[in-house]
Amino acid sequence: MIKIAIYGKGGIGKSTTVSNLSAAMADKGFKVLQIGCDPKADSTFTLHGKESVKTVLDLVKERKDGFELEDMVTIGYKGVVCVEAGGPTPGVGCAGRGIMAALEKLEQKGAYEKYQPDIVFYDVLGDVVCGGFSMPMRGGYAEKVFIITSGENMARHAAANIAMAIDNFKNRGYAALGGLILNKRNVKNEEEKVQELAEDFNTSIVGTLSRSETVQDAEELNKTVIEAFPDSPMAEEYRKLADTILGICEV
Image: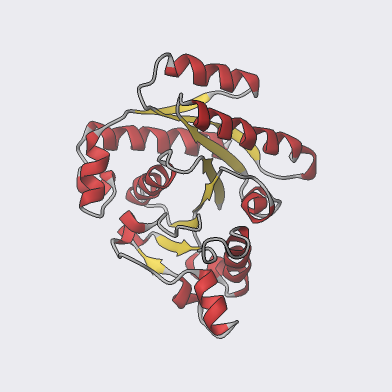
């Protein structure tokens, strides 16, 4: 089982990228589990097309431990197992609590034994890296972390913070940095800026995604690009990135 955490600033296209990677890997015949670790609970939307699903934190609040594994799970495109951690009412409580609850409950309820995923994706908001938000990096969860960024200042700042957190955890047996994913916003000198960031943290840009209307067109259909437009150049970019990530993680 390969466990991968994808981090990035809110709005950088993280969930879109992760969902397309899940779909691309499902097309290859892999059994995929995607865990949305963003309080907005919209990580897996384009995989299953449902407007809303019960989050793990919702279930814990409503039923304590009185729910089944199937209550936490929505099955999406080609069998991708989708889970949303959820978060508290805005302004109340710790958003990281949903992540901790989701990861703990998935283990307690036997998710890995039942679904036997080949690949687990943790889709994690990266504006802050503390408490629950760092949990997917910890021992026993992700083995590699990939950071999505653009050349925009705030995206690079968030990516640097995430990379620093990974570096600070390196002696604890936590996940290692697998590389940066450039999700282009077509800002001036974008590739050079992100390459400089990669060099600062002794890593590399493992994939580049174009700014494309195809992504928005697919999301209007409540689908991934892989499902909606499988023959598009954008779908091929996601497939190429999936192959690269698999190659890095299988070494």
